[in-house]
Structures are given as C-alpha cells and as structure tokens.
Length: 151
Figure 1 (spheres, rainbow, N blue to C red):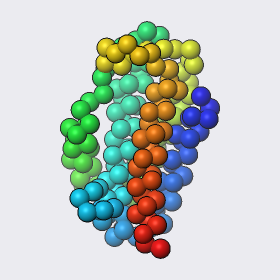
Figure 2 (figure 1 turned 90 degrees about the vertical axis):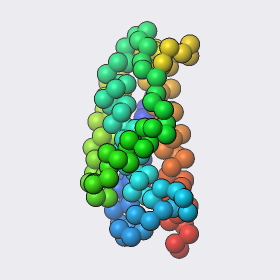
Figure 3 (figure 1 turned 120 degrees about the horizontal axis):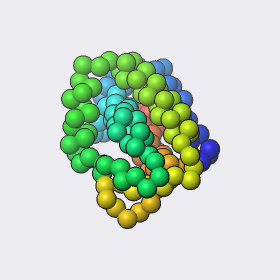
Figure 4 (figure 1 turned 60 degrees about the vertical axis):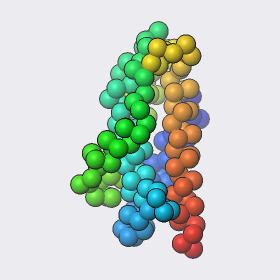
C-alpha cells in the first residue's frame, strides 16, 4: 500500500510545478476540443473531493460503497463547480484535498474489503487508490505532452 499511496501523493509535486507555468498556457486547451491544464487539475481535484466526502468514510469491512457517478455528468458538474475558481485556487485546493485524502486512506485497515455499487469485486483501500493512480497517470501524460510541445 505504501508504494501505491506514495505514487498517489507524488502527483501533488507535479501539480505544484504547474504554478511555474504562465496563466495563458494553463488556461488554453491542451489540444483542440480538449480541456486546459486548469480544467484537468480541477477534474482531478473534484474526483478527490468526491472520494474524500463520499467513498472513504464508508470504507469498512464488507461495506457496499455507492457506485461511481456517471463520468460525463460528474465532469460537467466539476467544470460548473470550478467555473469561478482561479488556477491558483484550483491547484491549492487539489494539494490540500489530495493530502487529506492520502492521510485518510493511509489510516484505513489494510485488511478491510468492500464492494462498489453492488458489484461482486472486492476492493481494498489499495486497489481503490490504484484506480486513481492510473487516472492521474492518464491526465499527467496529457499535461506533459502539452508542455513538451512548447519546448
């Protein structure tokens, strides 16, 4: 679990590095028809917020956690929620929320198993976090590719 959680927490450093990039670059789409870096960070923050508020508190032995929300609806909700937030605020909120989420998950018993949305698959806190480590990697790759095109 420690390796998975440290990977999850390491995203904070990458996101903090984005403070060094101009506002213009952080707010333009990474590609035509895609989100901006600001929106990607906001999207990651909003998932962390959801997990911290709705999922982690329910992670006890044999619990059935709520199913994940419809991704398109959740993403649209995130963009509306973050509409008036500055890039700096989004980055800061991401950092605070990711730290709290990591701390809360690390305090869970490693033996606890639960299901999600009535499914049969048993999750541990670690297997749950791995979903979001992969999710982070997908979006961090997008950001990296965008920044690489600027060099």
